Image (cartoon, rainbow, N blue to C red; front, side, top):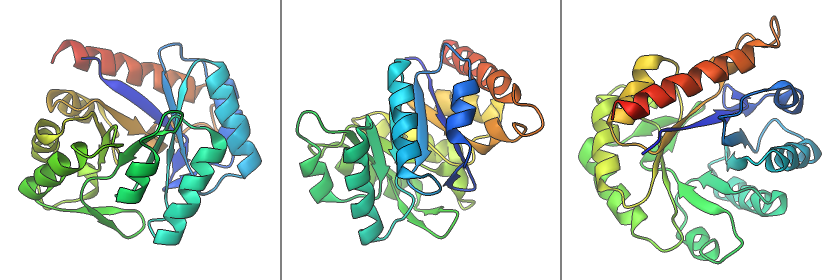
Amino acid sequence: MALNFVLMLTEKDVTIPDAVTVYEKLSADGLRTLAFKDVGIDPHLAEDLTEAAHADGRSVLLELADTSDAGQERGYRFALDLGVDRVVGTWRPEVAQEFAGSGKPEYWPFVGSLSGSPLVLTGSPGELAAEAERLSGTDGVRGLVLMPYRQSAHDPTLLMKRTAEASAVPLLIAGGVRDAQQIADIAGAGAWGFTMGGAALADRHDDPDSVTERVTEILRLSRHASDAR
Protein backbone atom coordinates (compact mmCIF):
# COMPACT_ATOMS: atom_id res chain seq x y z
CA MET A 1 0.00 0.00 0.00
CA ALA A 2 1.43 3.35 -1.05
CA LEU A 3 1.91 6.01 1.61
CA ASN A 4 -0.01 9.15 0.62
CA PHE A 5 1.38 12.64 1.19
CA VAL A 6 -1.18 15.43 1.61
CA LEU A 7 0.26 18.94 1.25
CA MET A 8 -1.38 21.33 3.73
CA LEU A 9 -1.18 24.96 2.64
CA THR A 10 -1.23 26.05 6.27
CA GLU A 11 0.99 27.42 9.02
CA LYS A 12 0.13 27.52 12.71
CA ASP A 13 -3.26 25.94 11.99
CA VAL A 14 -4.30 28.68 9.57
CA THR A 15 -4.35 28.63 5.76
CA ILE A 16 -1.48 30.74 4.43
CA PRO A 17 -2.58 34.02 2.80
CA ASP A 18 -0.56 33.26 -0.35
CA ALA A 19 -1.99 29.75 -0.80
CA VAL A 20 -3.11 30.29 -4.38
CA THR A 21 0.21 31.84 -5.41
CA VAL A 22 2.19 29.04 -3.76
CA TYR A 23 0.09 26.43 -5.51
CA GLU A 24 0.44 28.10 -8.90
CA LYS A 25 4.25 27.96 -8.56
CA LEU A 26 4.29 24.34 -7.37
CA SER A 27 5.58 21.66 -9.72
CA ALA A 28 5.25 18.15 -8.29
CA ASP A 29 3.82 15.44 -10.54
CA GLY A 30 3.54 12.86 -7.77
CA LEU A 31 1.39 15.01 -5.49
CA ARG A 32 -2.17 13.66 -5.48
CA THR A 33 -3.90 15.60 -2.68
CA LEU A 34 -3.94 19.24 -1.65
CA ALA A 35 -5.40 20.49 1.63
CA PHE A 36 -6.20 23.70 3.45
CA LYS A 37 -8.28 24.87 6.40
CA ASP A 38 -11.46 26.88 6.54
CA VAL A 39 -9.73 29.74 8.38
CA GLY A 40 -7.29 32.25 6.93
CA ILE A 41 -8.60 32.08 3.39
CA ASP A 42 -11.13 34.19 1.50
CA PRO A 43 -14.02 32.04 0.17
CA HIS A 44 -13.34 33.20 -3.39
CA LEU A 45 -9.68 32.23 -3.11
CA ALA A 46 -10.74 28.88 -1.67
CA GLU A 47 -12.89 28.36 -4.75
CA ASP A 48 -9.97 29.27 -7.03
CA LEU A 49 -7.65 26.89 -5.18
CA THR A 50 -10.14 24.01 -5.31
CA GLU A 51 -10.81 24.54 -9.01
CA ALA A 52 -7.10 24.75 -9.82
CA ALA A 53 -6.31 21.53 -7.94
CA HIS A 54 -9.18 19.69 -9.60
CA ALA A 55 -8.09 20.95 -13.01
CA ASP A 56 -4.67 19.45 -12.30
CA GLY A 57 -6.24 16.10 -11.45
CA ARG A 58 -5.69 16.42 -7.70
CA SER A 59 -8.17 15.82 -4.91
CA VAL A 60 -8.85 18.48 -2.27
CA LEU A 61 -9.19 18.01 1.49
CA LEU A 62 -10.70 20.69 3.72
CA GLU A 63 -9.94 20.59 7.45
CA LEU A 64 -12.37 22.39 9.75
CA ALA A 65 -10.37 24.39 12.28
CA ASP A 66 -13.18 25.70 14.48
CA THR A 67 -14.17 22.76 16.72
CA SER A 68 -17.28 24.47 18.14
CA ASP A 69 -20.66 23.17 17.02
CA ALA A 70 -21.40 26.37 15.13
CA GLY A 71 -17.95 26.40 13.56
CA GLN A 72 -18.24 22.81 12.41
CA GLU A 73 -21.69 23.44 10.92
CA ARG A 74 -20.38 26.44 8.97
CA GLY A 75 -17.42 24.37 7.84
CA TYR A 76 -19.52 21.56 6.47
CA ARG A 77 -21.67 23.98 4.50
CA PHE A 78 -18.48 25.56 3.18
CA ALA A 79 -17.14 22.14 2.13
CA LEU A 80 -20.33 21.40 0.22
CA ASP A 81 -20.25 24.79 -1.50
CA LEU A 82 -16.61 24.34 -2.54
CA GLY A 83 -17.09 20.80 -3.79
CA VAL A 84 -14.01 19.42 -2.03
CA ASP A 85 -13.36 15.68 -2.08
CA ARG A 86 -12.73 15.10 1.64
CA VAL A 87 -13.69 17.01 4.77
CA VAL A 88 -12.01 16.55 8.16
CA GLY A 89 -13.72 17.61 11.36
CA THR A 90 -14.78 16.55 14.83
CA TRP A 91 -17.04 13.52 15.16
CA ARG A 92 -20.68 14.34 14.42
CA PRO A 93 -23.00 11.39 13.69
CA GLU A 94 -25.49 13.58 11.83
CA VAL A 95 -22.75 14.60 9.39
CA ALA A 96 -21.84 10.97 8.78
CA GLN A 97 -25.46 10.34 7.84
CA GLU A 98 -25.70 13.39 5.60
CA PHE A 99 -22.42 12.69 3.80
CA ALA A 100 -23.21 9.03 3.24
CA GLY A 101 -25.03 9.87 0.01
CA SER A 102 -23.42 9.94 -3.41
CA GLY A 103 -21.94 13.18 -4.64
CA LYS A 104 -20.94 14.33 -1.14
CA PRO A 105 -17.39 14.82 0.18
CA GLU A 106 -15.85 11.90 2.02
CA TYR A 107 -16.17 12.38 5.79
CA TRP A 108 -12.94 11.78 7.77
CA PRO A 109 -13.52 12.58 11.48
CA PHE A 110 -10.78 13.02 14.06
CA VAL A 111 -10.06 10.20 16.50
CA GLY A 112 -9.67 11.23 20.14
CA SER A 113 -10.47 14.34 22.11
CA LEU A 114 -8.92 17.56 20.75
CA SER A 115 -8.70 20.90 22.51
CA GLY A 116 -6.75 24.15 22.48
CA SER A 117 -5.04 26.08 19.71
CA PRO A 118 -3.02 24.49 18.27
CA LEU A 119 -5.03 21.36 18.88
CA VAL A 120 -3.78 18.88 21.47
CA LEU A 121 -4.81 15.21 21.42
CA THR A 122 -6.06 13.37 24.50
CA GLY A 123 -6.54 9.60 24.67
CA SER A 124 -4.70 6.39 25.53
CA PRO A 125 -3.79 3.79 22.89
CA GLY A 126 -6.66 1.58 24.02
CA GLU A 127 -9.18 4.42 24.04
CA LEU A 128 -8.17 5.62 20.59
CA ALA A 129 -8.28 2.09 19.17
CA ALA A 130 -11.77 1.52 20.58
CA GLU A 131 -12.98 4.81 19.16
CA ALA A 132 -11.42 4.06 15.77
CA GLU A 133 -13.17 0.70 15.64
CA ARG A 134 -16.51 2.31 16.50
CA LEU A 135 -16.24 5.26 14.13
CA SER A 136 -14.89 3.29 11.19
CA GLY A 137 -17.86 0.97 11.38
CA THR A 138 -20.30 3.85 10.97
CA ASP A 139 -22.01 4.39 7.63
CA GLY A 140 -20.72 7.56 5.98
CA VAL A 141 -17.24 7.49 7.55
CA ARG A 142 -14.69 6.98 4.77
CA GLY A 143 -11.51 7.62 6.73
CA LEU A 144 -10.15 8.70 10.11
CA VAL A 145 -7.62 11.35 11.17
CA LEU A 146 -5.21 11.01 14.09
CA MET A 147 -2.83 13.64 15.52
CA PRO A 148 -0.30 11.54 17.48
CA TYR A 149 2.41 14.21 17.38
CA ARG A 150 0.13 16.70 19.11
CA GLN A 151 0.48 14.99 22.50
CA SER A 152 3.30 13.86 24.79
CA ALA A 153 1.69 11.29 27.09
CA HIS A 154 2.14 8.26 24.82
CA ASP A 155 4.48 6.94 22.16
CA PRO A 156 3.17 8.37 18.84
CA THR A 157 4.10 5.22 16.92
CA LEU A 158 2.12 3.05 19.34
CA LEU A 159 -0.91 5.33 19.01
CA MET A 160 -0.73 5.12 15.22
CA LYS A 161 -0.27 1.37 15.13
CA ARG A 162 -3.11 0.59 17.56
CA THR A 163 -5.47 3.01 15.83
CA ALA A 164 -4.64 1.78 12.32
CA GLU A 165 -5.08 -1.85 13.35
CA ALA A 166 -8.50 -1.13 14.85
CA SER A 167 -9.80 0.95 11.96
CA ALA A 168 -11.74 -0.49 9.06
CA VAL A 169 -11.09 2.63 6.96
CA PRO A 170 -7.88 4.49 5.96
CA LEU A 171 -6.04 6.43 8.67
CA LEU A 172 -4.52 9.85 7.96
CA ILE A 173 -1.83 11.22 10.30
CA ALA A 174 -1.97 14.99 10.75
CA GLY A 175 -0.23 17.67 12.78
CA GLY A 176 3.46 17.96 13.60
CA VAL A 177 4.94 15.70 10.90
CA ARG A 178 8.33 17.19 10.03
CA ASP A 179 11.03 14.64 9.24
CA ALA A 180 12.04 11.43 7.50
CA GLN A 181 11.91 9.27 10.64
CA GLN A 182 8.33 10.27 11.32
CA ILE A 183 7.39 9.44 7.72
CA ALA A 184 8.99 6.01 8.10
CA ASP A 185 7.17 5.46 11.41
CA ILE A 186 3.84 6.45 9.86
CA ALA A 187 4.32 3.98 7.03
CA GLY A 188 5.41 1.24 9.43
CA ALA A 189 2.34 1.77 11.59
CA GLY A 190 0.07 1.04 8.63
CA ALA A 191 -1.40 4.51 8.10
CA TRP A 192 -2.87 5.50 4.74
CA GLY A 193 -0.97 8.77 4.65
CA PHE A 194 0.09 11.97 6.38
CA THR A 195 -0.20 15.73 6.07
CA MET A 196 2.60 18.26 6.18
CA GLY A 197 2.25 22.01 6.05
CA GLY A 198 4.59 24.43 7.78
CA ALA A 199 7.65 22.20 7.42
CA ALA A 200 7.21 22.20 3.64
CA LEU A 201 6.43 25.91 3.34
CA ALA A 202 8.81 27.53 5.81
CA ASP A 203 11.34 28.92 3.31
CA ARG A 204 8.95 30.02 0.58
CA HIS A 205 9.38 33.77 1.14
CA ASP A 206 13.16 33.69 0.75
CA ASP A 207 13.17 31.00 -1.92
CA PRO A 208 9.92 30.46 -3.92
CA ASP A 209 11.35 27.26 -5.42
CA SER A 210 11.83 25.73 -1.98
CA VAL A 211 8.26 24.44 -1.81
CA THR A 212 8.64 22.40 -4.99
CA GLU A 213 12.02 21.12 -3.80
CA ARG A 214 10.67 20.19 -0.38
CA VAL A 215 7.52 18.53 -1.73
CA THR A 216 9.61 16.54 -4.21
CA GLU A 217 11.80 15.33 -1.34
CA ILE A 218 8.80 14.41 0.82
CA LEU A 219 7.32 12.42 -2.06
CA ARG A 220 10.64 10.59 -2.42
CA LEU A 221 10.68 9.78 1.29
CA SER A 222 7.08 8.58 1.06
CA ARG A 223 7.91 6.21 -1.79
CA HIS A 224 10.92 4.88 0.12
CA ALA A 225 8.81 4.35 3.26
CA SER A 226 6.14 2.58 1.21
CA ASP A 227 8.69 0.21 -0.30
CA ALA A 228 9.99 -0.61 3.18
CA ARG A 229 6.60 -1.64 4.60
